[in-house]
Length: 158
Image (cartoon, rainbow, N blue to C red; front, side):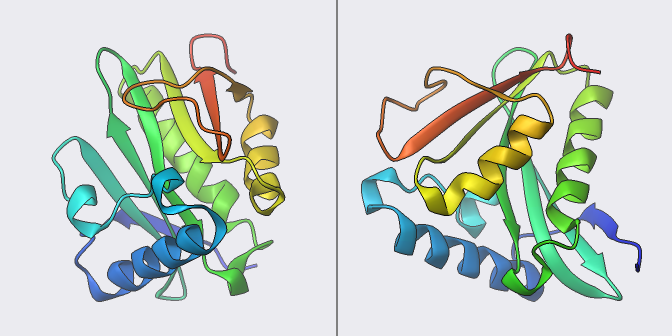
């Protein structure tokens, strides 16, 4: 298996913009507009957000971001893997990378919002396998039947 390379990227990079567009289109197809919380390219340019691309053999296969919240918490954002790369370990590699970064920043925890429908079950299972637990809405989120909110306490996680 070829190794993955993960590095900071600009959301306006053409490959990043293509992944962001695919992600937004997929979210729009799977959830009502008012329940889509995916960030577009301009949102991902915010200074509170660190955006990354995962590449293999020079091609971008996945993306992910960490958004700094108040205090010592982060939010996992824009996790997306191309359909052709699903099952390759790319999503798992990106998640591990972002968790490592958060730990290096001395984060106490990481939050995320993902879909609650069966389409999002593989994502929820991945997060659960790393110790994320369902939690109440956080930040600016509110209760939404289309959303599942999760938290990982990094102080307790190995």
